Image 1 (cartoon, rainbow, N blue to C red):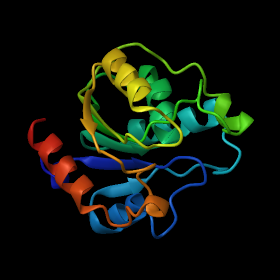
Image 2: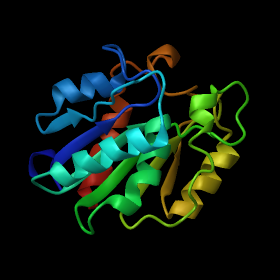
Image 3: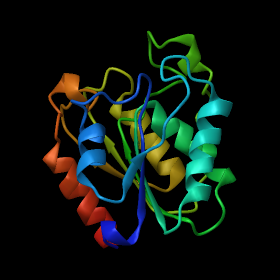
Length: 183
């Protein structure tokens, strides 16, 4: 599948993705991409965030590809049962937070627990770091296994955001292209 043949829905995490974040850069670079906007990026609620994601998927006019980062990953997994069958063709998950066990997360983020463990009805790929402060690699592997997602070991990459040095993140774009080629 090519990017021109689908609607790419970019789903940021807590705080949204500022202009230096790879998601914001990809949104500006991929012609068919749009960011799934939330009413409040700093005080998320599962119902509001999942509802917005489900609305964006329902509004897609072509097959949808989701690209989710951090809390956006958990929100996408929670929203998945609301998607009409066959619309979402694949999802690239990056840096899933462990909203159940990671220390220091805000209470609003903890409201997304427990992380669903049901298999997803579409192909998915989870890119996980061995040094993500919000999720151990072992937990990320457990989530991926439960969802039926492939997991990619990103090495010691922090939370795979601008703060960890992943501004444009060309390796991620290459990973997306390879994933989409297989769809």
